Length: 214
Image: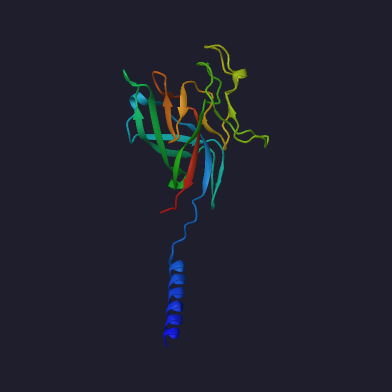
């Protein structure tokens, strides 16, 4: 009898284990992508506070699961942290999280997005100094994600006109072409300059996770 009881106990244990596996929720990873955008309005840490809205515009059409998001769509985010460099403080900083993409018809796509890379506006503008460093992915298929010191060949003396700005790649990370500005490991912009300002048109590559629609 003891052998029969042991066999039944083993069968019941195996059945319980299988049922628990079947009941476990799926943990499929969220879809990830990089969205190239440009800043819609200038940002100045002296004038910002936590919770303030930040908007950018997509610069290309995006093929998302079951939808097409056209170029020029608005990406809405908010300030998560801000610090202005005051007397005695070593740096200023700015953290932003992006929450949704607004599309036509009053609809929006929820996202969780953070700053992946930052670069100067692609419009020709007066140069303000030496380019910063960052990671710019090459389009040749070679050495993806190599670190570059900035395109110094396109940067002239202070006050000259920048003939071309480095264009961010979806695989690029960090800050490219803007002096005294860095992106830390928590996706927060940090500046050692007196003020942290981003002009309208500044390139912002947003790394996002698509959130399930409500």
